[in-house]
Image 1 (cartoon, rainbow, N blue to C red):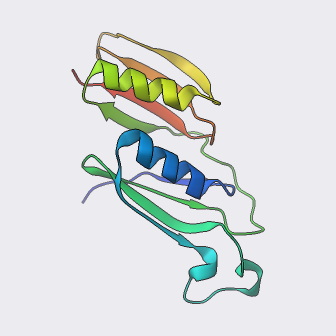
Image 2 (cartoon, rainbow, N blue to C red):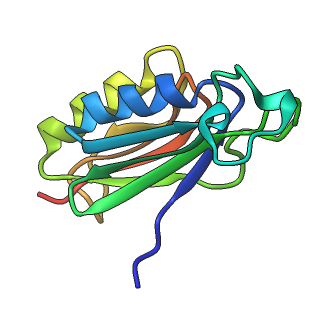
Length: 134
């Protein structure tokens, strides 16, 4: 059984998942808002927040949600989403795009284990590791 990253946002899930779908060439983006759930608490009615979203990226699935309306939570801290790039050029493009409005932890560059590797926190607060395989 595969392991799937599941990331949480404070109201930016729809924007983030749409951006990730476009950047990584994702397919089959699905999103369900809290307000569309089968049993909706009164406090959730009319909320634009996402209860569950998922997109296929390559052979993997990235899943996400917003914290429920009125609930606080830490956005992505203490973990990173690792995305393999098919080549250095693609990895560099992804890295540069993710860094816009975010901040770089480790510049994208060759290492002993990858011809292109970098770590970045994007504008949504998601920590990414981008590593080129060739």
